[in-house]
Image 1: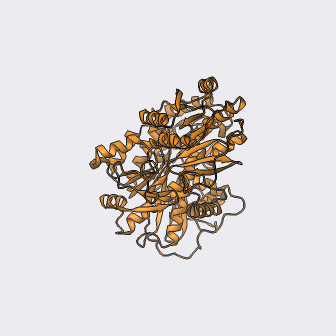
Image 2 (image 1 turned 90 degrees about the vertical axis):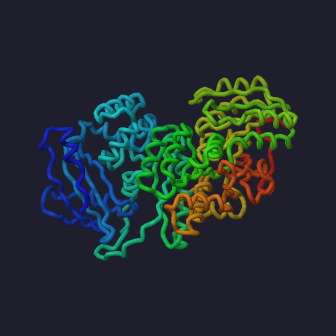
Image 3 (image 1 turned 30 degrees about the vertical axis):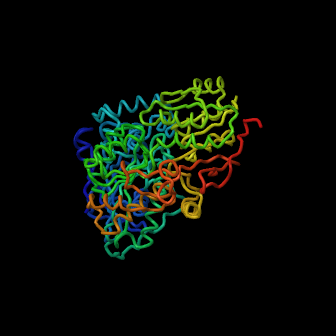
Length: 590
């Protein structure tokens, strides 16, 4: 029998006693048939929406779901669903309630999307209103829930099931939450497939090894988060098709974060620790990295991320006892300056000079004393260094510097895809004869979609990129078959490799909860993935960059340099990984 929903508690807080109905109980089989259970409370057999949600829950792979169904803006039903794995059906408990905490239907919409990590701007887009209106509604929600922060309100919403289904505005960005996964299946056209055979009790499944995924599925990095989720899912599917790890299947639990929101990161790490996942796989964070490291270290499970942070590597070197189970599965971003100077040393530029456009965010700069020394060794002078403060709505200062000096090349580092595309479009309206060399951002498919033809000729680099060799192409083909779109050239492959690294470490002993043993094995493994070679037994526990940190490509990850040619990303260096040769950008005259 499932736990009963918390409608009683909510009603006591939000409305006079006696306004809640007794809960109705029903069982839904995989073919959609609804059977009343106890004959008490509302009869749920005439509620096809509940049956469809129950069948979608079976297909989502989740064990349970609690949500609010609002009909005609006046009939509120608090619903709890629990999957009974032994019989392959879903038990539903549902009761009509007064609006919890006095929320309005629109405030419930806002709370639902807020709980998924969306910004006010994103919420406004799905609700067809303005960010200013959403801001006022968020303030009202916080006041009614008695919470001081968005993360606090999100925790209340998830804990009490104050999430509206169907999702407001058909939002597709909440698939990390059970309500989002179910909503996606419910919106599929036609009847839902049968996910089990009614009346046949399947064998109890073996409990899987569950990997916690800490992914930026909300906020400005959500496209990268989706790339990582898909890469990790593909790796897990392939592992399970081969029999799992040490005779056990592997599964994932996704906790969505906003890479710019420290509260969401802390909340998600705490959630994964509470689930006692044996490992955490994550992307990059653009907020307080130290706080996340402290929380991960307190929990103690191996944490693999692709932050490419020099600071993080330094913390591991300085405090190996505390941070020795945290790994960066990619070289640090300090290598970007080295790669820039190395690449330019082989080119004839219009002018033997360079400029740098960077962000003021900590630990994101490529320009430093070593970069300046290497650039000068390449025979180039430095015309300017411009550092911009987020959110980069105005590229005027950077463009004025480029047009005033017309350097041979300009390095643009660490901006989000919308911002980097906006820069390139503005640059293309009145271009200088300057090679544009970007760091990482064009790896996100959204960049090329937004920049369009203006991106033709742009050069960019990533310290963890999908190789164009046979292994990389085979991964891209499998990814495309599974998802209908090609992967980007960075984080999808990185997440795929992270899962396989963990599998290798676990497979030798089958003891994933022995965190110290797993960390030791991660240091011992040398793995050739689709993004290159991982050898994490280095000071700082990061991958090493070929050729700038290690001359042997069999022990390092190549810092791949791409150029956008004919609307596609082509590797132009280093050898032996080049797929094409450098072309003069169309805005630079012969």
